[in-house]
Length: 116
Image (cartoon, rainbow, N blue to C red; front, side, top):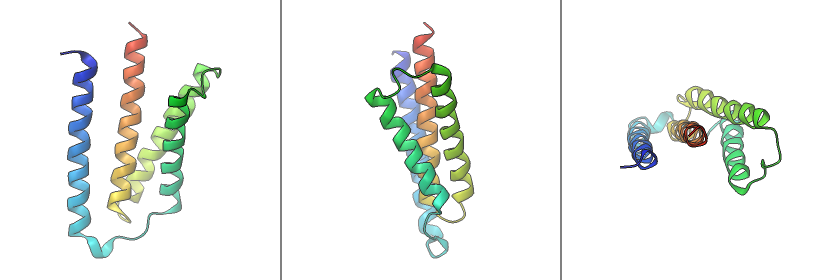
């Protein structure tokens, strides 16, 4: 089994566990859930925007250092926002954490592939 397939299977397992945990916690504490905060919305839009810009090739002519700082900054911001959002809205928090894990794993996979 190749490394990338194994890596994606691990990420899929983590995603399913996180989604199951988030849905369970959401339905147990449904009355305490509020709308996601503005920080959660900003983190979500930044994460999706950076990922779409990366996939479409918008960063092809930019500096690798700038891309790495931007990418990891958005990943850390999304992860911290997800942790802070956990008491307000569990589903938004789990979504932010899962996207952060996916983006971190995607960049680490790209680093492993390019270092070969």
